[in-house]
Image (tube, rainbow, N blue to C red):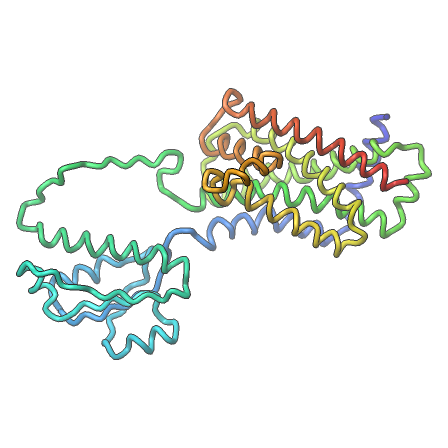
Length: 370
């Protein structure tokens, strides 16, 4: 095996990528606009929910409850009549409608337990699930503050001091942007390497390589370093320019340590792309295989859902996937400023899994070239 062959073959891969506008556009989109929209377009918490109020009480207490529903969780409340509730809910104009009955404040001050009616459009699942809890807490807080207004602010028996570690503002963009970068690293590594191999087979250039004095190991290493370098540079750019610059997300840990773990993940993912490309007969088949492999890797690796909430069997199975250890390492470094003393087990696991993937992919690639 000669390093000169690996270098020249890798440069050939980079020139081939430069002549593929579709893949270049995918790289640019994946590490720029995709990161930005994933962090800002679909927040996990309640955001600008449409709410209307039927105020049949017209009391100071009902006015307080109306004023307590304000952005960004809710749009400015709309006061409507009781006859409009069904029509607005059927038309999808309101997610929540609160009906405050007559004499609500009077009955409350008299010691009774009056009821409020909250209508929820349950077809808007995300907002309906969290919004009902938000409204219940807001209404309960306003009622409690109204009833205690004459006690000169009597202190509660317990004072809860809240400290949100690593994300003081509880901003979804902090978590979403970094998680999307982590997912994109794996996705682009598999796609670029697999597409490069399939492109050579469809264009007939793979036969040219077979008659040249190069070994399968040199060909495979060339694809790994060239495509991995592209993704690594795009990852560093995305973290610095998009995440830290455009989204104003403060990255806590060492960028160098994260990139070292990303290199191991890139080698594993590119080997996976080569393995899938040797199985697929064409680009459409490669796309189908990619869906079958990539979706479980992304969903079950712990990036979207904590591993602790998954069944134990799934946790054990996903321990063999490089994504799982890369997600743990990346989140620890970038979110919690973890050092090598903390994340070395994940790096060791990545090294072991990457070595296994490389051996398996090389054996499959050699059989593919015969």
